Image (cartoon, rainbow, N blue to C red; front, side, top):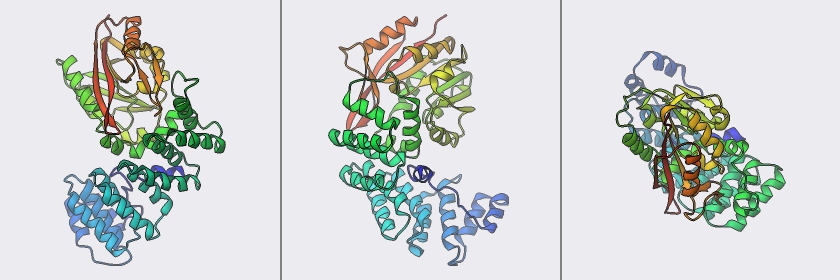
Length: 414
């Protein structure tokens, strides 16, 4: 069931290959130009047996080709659905376009129509819940997800239901949900971590590797649309700090590590500086999304601390954007990151801002850690960093309020 959920939603990468393309289409795609292929498909005769597949393929090519035409792609998908309202992949591709364009109401309406037409409702109900969540319609999203978790043990549905409770400030319901999840799946790492976040008590020094994998494998397809909704500024903020601290860096001259690269959102920024760009992440599903961007020279699925242990004085630049928020105690990962830098190399990282008066870290109800400025300054000094940069920035919004982060640049001086 997990693969069903993970292939559902989040961007125009949904169902992006036709599962059984026509032999004629295969031949053309090998030997003819994109425009010739589109022209051939747009003139294809109406035949019940394969009209939907040809029109859907035309939509895919118009949407994702060298010169995308989203208006024409949308028209092609609509043509498929007019001929066959129960055509699943055309509906999902059109929903994905709506989500990418911020047309959530149209996406929700199309999903409801598709469910009424008897399409694969388990998949579509998950996508409906996700889109309702994007649109801040939490009560309706929760109602859909409650039915789903009664039908499946899949992490994605259970995890999203908990997120909806937390994001809508229903903390008691969130606790009850995670306790129920643990009763159904004893030892489930997401449920354990989130209960620690919501109830306090024993706070782990970092998020378990199993928690990170489960959350981000479930979250991979929906990751970038959700960050767009939250007005995430990570790539922009990193680009600004790099242009300030590395103004003389020659293009494509540095060995660069994207630490916790996720789907590769920061990759295009780092690519400008990198003669060799490495991405490391714990989530195979997130790395699969990053690979589709064709930015990285290598992508490695490994725990960050384990990976850094074998990289002494390897990189000129390490960027950990929204990665250290899954570590509470930063002492080991910060030390390893600095040791992995060459002389005069830079470490750029962000954390969520904790209380100014405190000198430590704490686990927040949404499951991420926050760190106080004093804690960070003390750690940097302990590791021989006496200068550098720390700036308070709003990297995203949650509940229409800014979430403030600390963006730090530290240089390893010989």
